[in-house]
Length: 144
Image (cartoon, rainbow, N blue to C red; front, side):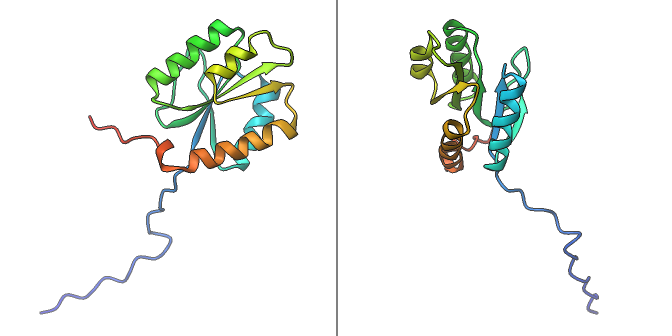
């Protein structure tokens, strides 16, 4: 006796395939900057979250956008991120004529000036999109 075959599942019942979407986390970033840069990152394919205070780092984040108040805070924050999260890309925000910009340039992958200018941050976002799409920036699977 041959059992009747079930019909193939409809497209509506098929599980959706998960597509890798790089995650960017904002740390201490003020509203006007968060809105402009967040929109550009979303347009580039990133999901964007606010990591909050105290720092709650999402395991899957590949990009940190930080707005430190001083070089010491930036150094401490980047050190914590790199130790806890592996090697995320780091974009630091600084005001124009910032006295600790040389230190930020040493610590971060990119430095953007506030107030943001589209002609400055859009090329950086494009470069980040290309870096984040590479497999080496994908978060490693955790085995417990």
